[in-house]
Amino acid sequence: MGLYREPLLRLMGDRGVLLEYGDSIEPEVNLKVRTMAALLESRPIKGILEAVPTYRSLLIIYDPMLTEPQSLRESLRALEKITTQANVPPPRLIEIPVCYGGELGPDIEFVANYHKIKVDEVIRIHSSPCYQIYMMGFTPGFPFLGVLPKILETPRLDTPRLHVPAGSVAIASNQTGIYPISSPGGWRLIGRTPIKLFRPEEREPFLYKAGDLIKFIPVDRKEFDALAQRQL
Picture 1 (cartoon, rainbow, N blue to C red):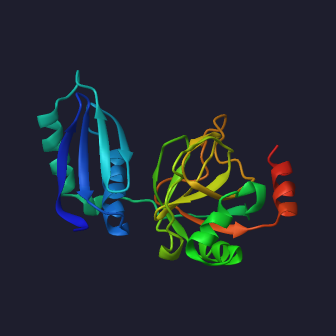
Picture 2 (tube, rainbow, N blue to C red; picture 1 turned 135 degrees about the vertical axis):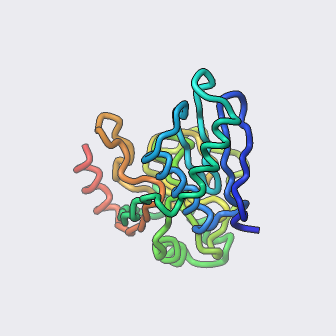
């Protein structure tokens, strides 16, 4: 179905409202999400504490002491009528160096064998597109990137790893992403970046935000180690 003719409003517990714009991962749907998020930022509505963009919906968190769902519905519907006035930031292109394979990408051989191609082909195909950041989440700064070339679509691990090193570049189904911090994870690891993606001590702790574009740049182990040294 893709983009809905009108967004659906759903109640989410006692403090949330979900604006749902479509039922698939598509740039057109995600642009609607980011447009509404930008509009809410420039035209705050009383009682809204946070707006969280996702692939195809926008989660609105509100203070029930300051507003209530019916009032929010009316305010959000009113904003929907002026989305052409939203100032959506233009995407930035962020280049991320990645050392593919070996101990830094232990699943790349599986991915190559699964698709009956060579590891070099996996690297070439994965690093060719500019991926849009559809949403951030799971862990601080984890970018959900799409859409992975169909030839690399690979199922998740049957059993997630308890520890995935920070900087790991991974794929799952038709998505790819980067683990900014060490955490559990069930995606297939194909490489690692030496770049620190989450710097909580900085005013802007992330290198990117939803809507930006990411391009993976293959580097060898020597370059990886040199770049990692500069990050210390």
